[in-house]
Image (cartoon, rainbow, N blue to C red; front, side, top):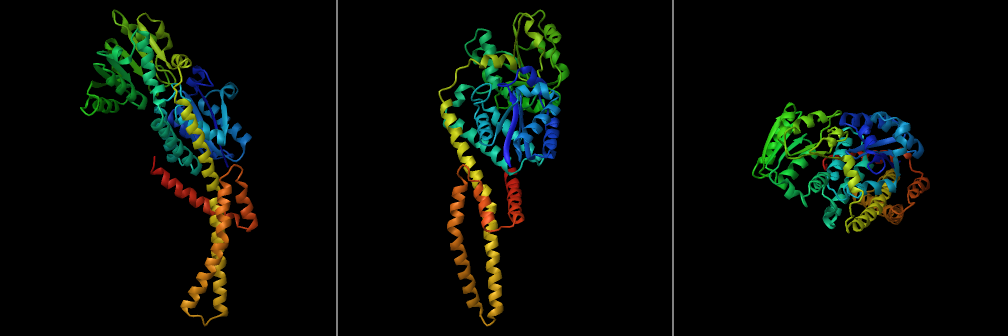
Length: 454
């Protein structure tokens, strides 16, 4: 089996396609279930964010896997396969590992170095585990991607390249209004945040730390908005004045807000151009709108309304294209390359482990059978003699197997080393079902272990 990723992102597709292809969580679940039901795939999980949709799978056939995963993405996204195909990219085996590790480090983000992607990778793994579609390979891969991302942020200054889409979006708004930094622009402003998910929570916290005078949280589920408002207003939080309102109150709050950040999972518009135009009538202060949703929450036509400044995913993509790369990017790329090599070596070594275990199990069975046969021929042996003979035979077998099993593990960890497991099974005529049973046991153990680590 081999790792395959098929996806599209802000680098390969226009926002209009990403917007239409966005996958809510219930659709992601159905996608994973259907992927696992497909013949080429043994494991699957999906990484779906505001600017990328990627399907990871462990497949046994490359071409069939690409065709199946592409078709499934088209079916579940609602974008026709012919229309979607030109924007899809494919990564296989080590290139797929390299891609995910780069994503985890923020190298492939719209804002280079942003750290929110780590939480999204963690969520993707958790969903695959909950749906029992992520097995040993994807568990190992995504857990290692999280570690690589954390290493990049702790060992380099990649964070300086950009903290998040929220920060980058607010910087674009502040710059558009003639302010050099977000803190100066935000001081004393009233903020309305629509949504209470991870992105909205990050936006609310960022605004509060930047110095806004009030944060109002509007959400379809009022209890979630109230919880976020409570966290923000607590002394241990940001200490900002914060309150929660229902979605029906958004129109009224819009008339009092100076800045609005929206990021919901809605499939339709949350703010129409008409609602924005009504809210700004008769006011002198400008209204800043930051739309971080995919598909969009705020009508794109709102940017034509006098006194309104709209920044959305599409304009952020255009702005980030010319953003300077941090000096630490090269260092992070080096980390990614090293980690890809280490991951590949570990996976190749792990691939041969079931064969080695099966070989030692067979050897132990041979020893047991021969000792039993000896006892039948020499019934007068006492317990001490029998134990000494048994131990001697075991030592002889262990010494004979030690060098070849250690060496074969070393060889298997090198590129092209997968064939050594096949050679070992052939040379010792190992039962394939015995090897497979060891693999299944390892998979179940890894699944239980990794569920507790996410």
